[in-house]
Image: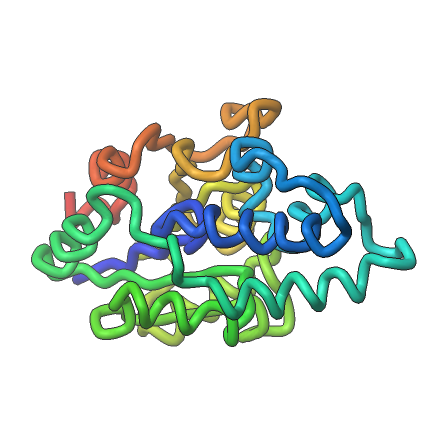
Length: 224
């Protein structure tokens, strides 16, 4: 039998933070502020508009200016989401190797479909992917288990034959709630204050080139 390896997108498969940070800084420019350093914005890239606008402008949901700024952020990001985004080192080879071994892979992200698809297509990930689940595909997003359960079902696998890889606590929580072992991608958009050891992932990959060695021991026993 085969297995399904599921990946988060931003900060796990693809380095999308430069384009996300650029959209956040565009909101600062619109308000007459100087751009922030990329290093300050990168750790919250996986949190999307909510995290980026909090760090870039101190805005939180419920603030009077939050919603119009969020909509402008999304518009600016959609217009420039493939300028600097790219796969992390070794990811293209990893995905090819997964297929060569007779395994399947897919993507489960909290990013909504209209923002995800252009980048996934730009990075040529649609041809070999067994499934793509976005933040608006199911009624709930991570850390709820439903997106991962839906991905497994759509790809034709039981959750017991799946592994999930992600760079956020929500990814690990979703995997465990769905009944899947999880790999924490420590090379992703992890802040200095994040203690990955408390996430209770089965294992951790400190670079994208270490992913296979982290994933392989978590595969069903008949495949090891």
